[in-house]
Amino acid sequence: MNNFIEYIKGSFEELNTNMTWASREEAQKSTVIVAAFTIVFALVVAGVDKVFQTGLDNFFKMF
Image (cartoon, rainbow, N blue to C red; front, side, top):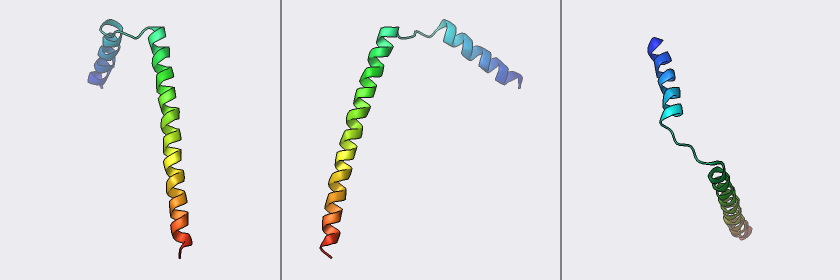
């Protein structure tokens, strides 16, 4: 248990002394880029799903 507590203390010390954090502007810019990519990716996946759904519907209508 003592090793675990030392590990946690060491982790917090590392975060406070050795980490460099992105500025607020960089974080906001990155967030907007990730959100935009996520929306575009979701639309592409929805489009591919629609194409496959239509194709399978047409395929099964033949039988």
